[in-house]
Length: 364
Image 1 (cartoon, one colour):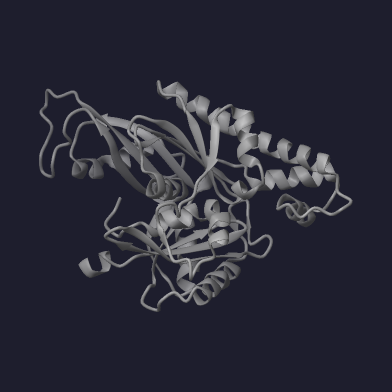
Image 2 (cartoon, helix red, strand yellow; image 1 turned 30 degrees about the horizontal axis):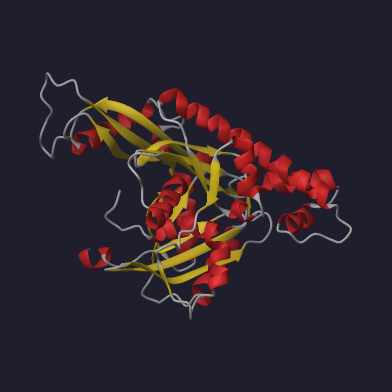
């Protein structure tokens, strides 16, 4: 087991439009990027978070492993889930040891999870405590009314099982399961660190889901998965410019036909991003009902972050500074192996995969 713990994991980010793979090496000076690749999925492979064509995902992962020449010994991997199959809730419980909490967490979870408890995998992490958390075998004094904040996470077993089987069919061994919001946090922290006196939001705009993770004083304070993403922008272009979905996707990436009106295009982009921003603002309002803190800035990633000018639009819509995340910042990147311009361009899309690839087998 101990030799296995030292081996890096392959990070696999399965999105609605593409799959991203990252493989890192940890050195005394930090991380080095050994492999990164991404491949598009056929249309309608994943629809509204539901896998419709599992073999297409398996084939895409196989192609990535081959194209990136991942060593045959590197078969342990980590993947992540998000969306309606995942519940994240910060709860407050009496001060107790993590062992006691592990025994009682199922009962605690039933109060907050809208699924049958037998249908989900439950995990937790203590994020803040009044006083010292009792060690294994220890109990808090009976007259101690201290409490602690715990991040409760539940993910549906069938979703995890489905993705695990797809990954196994590609020749990998699913070893760790993470959540998109936490993978983004890991990718951000790797590049920028986490200040203990700041409150900001990590926003991951995928094709059909936008993950929001509000970090307060260096820890996750509030998370929400919004059932909107880059597809809303595509649909806005499609509707406002009277074109098909595929042409709208092409336009979204900046490949406009000569006959296309740039003014109509910009208006359509802003209309689509506006819908996402309205939900982000709602998320911030929900957070502020439970905290005295205020979000000061936004860090953006995901496929939607590649939309030209989106950071500026979000800044105008929400009124907060917004910048793209570069998970390769401070990481050793072999310029003979990776094209510098390409790495800089795809950086926001790589955040989840990079965050996953930093995981270890013995981490929570």
